[in-house]
Length: 189
Image (cartoon, rainbow, N blue to C red; front, side):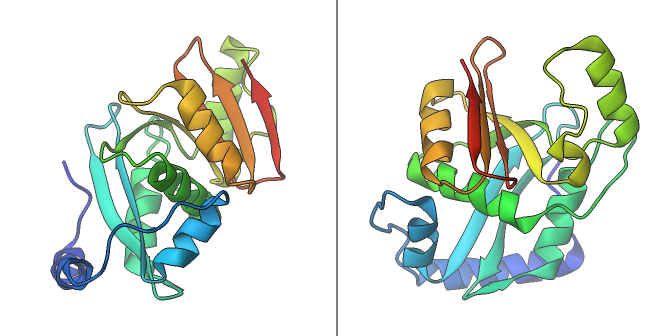
């Protein structure tokens, strides 16, 4: 299932035309936000959720402006699948995910394991695992746990860390990387 709306379809058609006329390959910079700025035109996020079976492939920022409808689609996609609860997902976290994805030069969408978590879901997960933070940024809709089949956890970790724009956690045994837009920090093995 693709997260779309009637407005999203016409917007996507317009964006498809726009993207077709834009140079898609941007030079690689050490800072991922340099990559996003160097494109100067659009930012795109692609993800799949095995929990819901949904996919999202959306351009959410064009020429310095976030697209409210696209951010709404992202918020819905990143919802707490256990309770269906939503909270407006922080576009800064999406920027980090998109920048890291672009730096890895991969076409595969992220597999999203966890986006927004309600306080109840976070408490339940915390009771089952020492690795769940009591004040997790997932509860503020500022974090996501992601994986890619075509890239290792170490590669994803390095790309997200190169953004120098938030928290990056490496969970090698569980095969995912945590990305958030909180203070710059990193952890994991």
